[in-house]
Image (cartoon, rainbow, N blue to C red):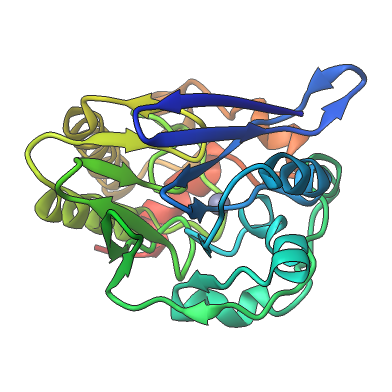
Amino acid sequence: MIETRQYGEVLQIRMSRVFNGQPLYWVAAYLVDGLLIDSGCQHTAQELVDFLSDYHVEQIVNTHYHEDHIAGNWMLHQQRQIPMYAHRDSLPLMRQVPTLYPYQELVWGYPQPVDAQELGPVIKTPRYTFAVLPTPGHCPGHIALLEKEQGWCFSGDLFISERPKVLRPEENVHEIMKSLQYLLNCAPEEFTLFTSMGQIIPKGRQAVTNLLSYLQSVSQQVLELHDSGHSLDDIRQILFGGESRMAEVTNGQFSVNNLIMSVLTHGN
Ligand SMILES: [Zn+2]
């Protein structure tokens, strides 16, 4: 299922598999001046390709290698020879079939391996220039795209919400905080945030600042509680009132535990 929304020059393409009549989970791609930013999951790949047959697409940039961001690449590349670009660290991961948990298989499916090219420091379209910002933390090889003159930031999965309670085990909260700070340093005073969750946030700086402050505060509280001898269970209960229900349905992949462990294990 695809829903679109035009925001000035930017077309948002939200995609979700429909299961038992319900959309399962929305992931957004964006099309601007012939540049496709991300390409959704395998279950919606054919629909995306059909939808894009009416549009001029000159190049694809993937913000990261996750299965819900790259799966339209293969068919677009096969049918239209559209070049694909991603961060150097993502390339080997896009060339292999990932190992997925059952919930990932159900919601997103397995992407076809693709051979993308390495992104340089900028990517240009006929009318715009996007700075490529390496922003690891959600995973290695994550990038955000920043069009400074227009005040657009395509943030991939760097920004999920202002107050996330769960992380995946591979996420590194300290790197996420560094990446958020880097984005704030590079971005113009005012910018609009276009997230992979589908939010379009005109006050992007405020939203990113709020997320950064929240993560700094949570990290500090976790470390203080840990230093004063509290167990993981205690910390989870005191700060978050227990584990999230997300943990159960995602085979423990999205959990409060992972957030706390990331603060404690990845160091400062
Ligand atoms: Zn992701």
